[in-house]
Length: 123
Figure (cartoon, one colour):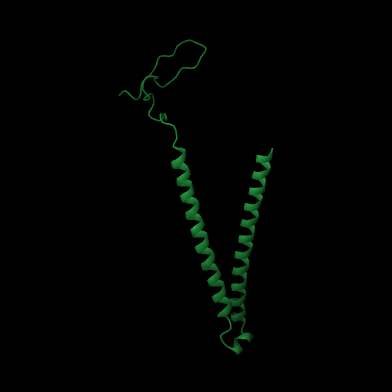
């Protein structure tokens, strides 16, 4: 098996290379090809887009669920005096408030990272 060779240790001050220099088959786990940065960045971009689409779908679904909870809480005038109706209403308000706070936090973090990036580039 040519890929796994044992090399005798030499008594020198420099380190011994475990891979052969003529072909890049010294060890099975050695990388012999440089990384494909363009393919890695395309894959990362696909993951970012996928996460963005999932976030938008979740935001729209959460907003619709919160609005339907709020609007469906009081089907009649007598439901104003029902405690369960108020629970559904405030559950919808809480869901919308959570989504607004989450979006605000994401916008603040993105703005902070952009400003920090500009400061680093300016130095």
